[in-house]
Length: 498
Image (cartoon, rainbow, N blue to C red; front, side, top):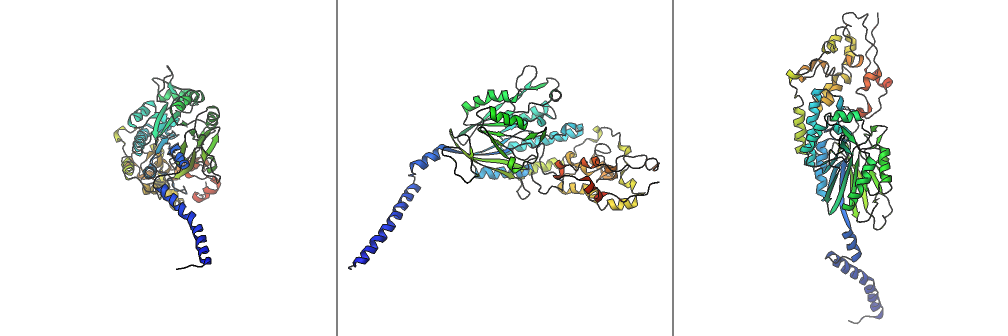
């Protein structure tokens, strides 16, 4: 069939428009068959992925504190284990490490002997959970020494990962107590991990931790200057676990070359920050990235790293601009252990067993309770103070023990004291707890055993703020406690005084 000139021109124009697309599709098909353009292939070969997950300042937590005032009940080692399991499914090259102060809390050294036994059992549970989650290194923090070096050495035997501290040494010969470094291989990368315990621990604490052979601490900065270059020669990436004061860690980053990443607990004015504000979670000094996350296992820090050899310092992908060519990149997020997360059934079984066995106490070995006779309990008070008792029964104080029963924590030594009267003074064994359950009159007013005998000369003192702050402090409730505002909510009706 003959075509007119306009038709021929139209067909030619259409062919000119379609031809580039056809050629492009052919190149795309070639790429899918393996003939990747050279620049793209070189980029893929140069970049190695690492998904680094870390925890800091677990301070003995295995689950969420039962305090109801927490707006979001974040945490629990069971949720953490489930999250890690899911993350390993999505990230083949996952590195899991812990920044120290893991096994015990700041006040655990003040516990009575019968309470320390349970703390040791809980620490064993933490170590075994870490084994099963696949932790590959843990820093020795000063809280980890709270119950003595001998206990920590036993935990090291139990652990399938190294406990690290390059600067914790025996005072007599300056030999290290634990290995200072570890080299971990993941995804074709060699990651050198260096551990530094805070170097300002008082000498009396170090002597008490190991009386037979006292401990000492080497200067963190001098230790890092010695060991970081050695790791730098052997490894692709150097990670520093440093439980030092914030000022020291910033000095380490500024003065010690070769540290790619530092896990920083953000210790200011002698205190660990339990909750890290978003703007404080990352800081870059010199060529070192300082990363931080929340305490108590509430949130894990995660760094999704694309590592390029010689591509330091790392740059973030959380900005709109494209990263410079040839630089390693990372994406940082804090993974919150929220209530909606599933719990790892294996770890949950271990935690439940710990809770059930919390009433381990041998009645025959209990210490004498010299103050037991000084406690009257609310039952005695109710005989005369009828109106006050009826008011108290409508407050949350009167059901404080039930709130522990709801979470299965009613016999945990680290929970029970704020939900009963006279724990450790009036009773210890669970079977003796009945008259002391809930927050009672004497929790607030103090002891006054002679009041029933002679009320006029032994009147109850007024309630002081310090009585409330024992339990109503920000570490427990996550909110400021304003005494003058809260007191009216639980203040009993006044009685006329003679």
